[in-house]
Amino acid sequence: MSDRYRKMKQMAWGMMLLLLMPLLTGCGVSVPTDARPVARKVRVMPDNDGATLPPNIAPLNFEVMEAGDAFVVRYYAKDGTEIVSSGNPIDIPVDEWHELLRAAQGDTLYTDIYVKNGGSWSRFPTMKNPIATESIDEYISYRLIQPSYVDYEDMDIRQRNVSDFDEHIIFHNMMLSEDEKGQCINCHVPQNQNLTGHSLFHVRQLKGGTVLIDGAQATKVNLKTDSTLSAGVYPAWHPKNDQFIAFSVNETGQVFHTRDVQKIEVIDFGSNLIFYDAAKNQVFDIDCRTDEFETFPTWSPDGQWLYYVSAHYEQQSDNIDAELNSAYPQLKYNIYRRSFNAETRKFGERELVLDAAAMDKSASTPRISPDGKWILFALADYGQFHIWHNSSRLYAMPTGLGTDNPDPQTTVHPALDLKWGAASYHSFSSNGRWVVFSSRRDDGNYTRLYIAYFDSDGRLHKPFLLPQRSPRYYTELFRSYNVPEFLARPVSPTLNDLTKAVDRAPLQAEYVGSSLLVPEARSGISRQLDDSKERIVSTVAY
Image (cartoon, rainbow, N blue to C red; front, top):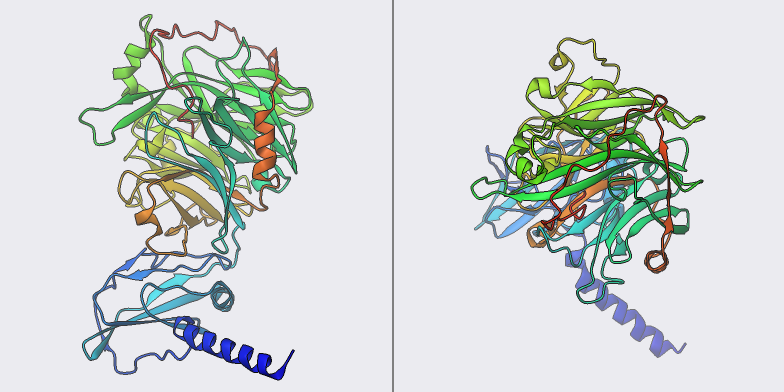
């Protein structure tokens, strides 16, 4: 390399650094020393002040929603580690942010905001975020969909690294769709936060089936048989055996409101539970009572109990569609469980865990904490698809609660402050200290993801919105999140691998009867559904 070329290269680098200097956080930025204190709370978007944070979360970038000519933000820990940034919105480098969180781990992160108007500076009250000692799982998977009711084109399942802003598509429903032949995809659910590399998702309509992921391999199966209500819908992996999966099977429909601000009600016109043994490719009944709507199964961490919710409903006519179109507020779901013997693959008798109907409430999506001590569930006025219910709140109760407790309200408590409403689907991190849940609390239309610390007393601390690099990301995103699941490791197969798996013909599962230790009378799976109506079946699932 000639000396002349070397000098020109050095000059180019020097010019580039000069141009980048104003953009680099903390470079030459000083904290105003003559700022006038302001008594009121600063307006920022998003407002995560007071939320407990993991020590490995992505930067909580925000925009100051105050009028000003200049802005300075100082993040700092008690040991003196700090980041000072200028400009608005705030964009913090990931590495510097993680260094600051490590300094504040087990203590508090402080944030001071300074705003200049004219020639004078103002300083708002310090924002404080407790920093937990426990880390969060590095990834979350979710589905992104348009907020429509019958049109499901252009949806995908993604995984996001929550320690930074890296996001990848797991599968997109337009990979194989052809003109009017479309697909719906839903329910990406891992076994044990994907620690084992096992997960699954469903494909509906074109090339339908359930895609089972085992490490880098993927297989598609058809769980619908002549003796079951539908293909698998809501899944639950057995925590100790990667070949055992419980599913609900649902006949799902939608009722549109004309005056209710909640717009829509999602109803199960029929639902049962099945058990799938992937090693044998066999399907068993678990609970198929015609006067019960069983759904949302989940396992205890030791694999010895299967929890689920069920609503009792006795059909009054030969047209259940017409009945439930108006009677849906009567559907009150309770929490039940059945014991399970992995050696015999048999389930015990049904046990009532929570009589939510006695509280004039309806439970949904029970989840057991990884330590086995708590049931976290959504509770609303009626129904089970609580993503549309403004009354939905997250509640917790000890798993040791039995049916002999005369007053379940003495042990059931709100897991989250009631002002954080409209909470629905939720899942635990692998260490049990973090919960991600979905909520429409911001505008009532779009579902966003919130993360909250779950303490040993079964309570969620103030949550924070899933961080994005741009604070305006959510105001410009016209899609909804749903089915958030923590992943301790990313899904291995590539988009191309999974496309090939979906494109293949599915393996047909075999129905082999009841998996109950004492089989119950089977009176048929039909509820005399009105086949003259076209119903959206399972496309709204999760």
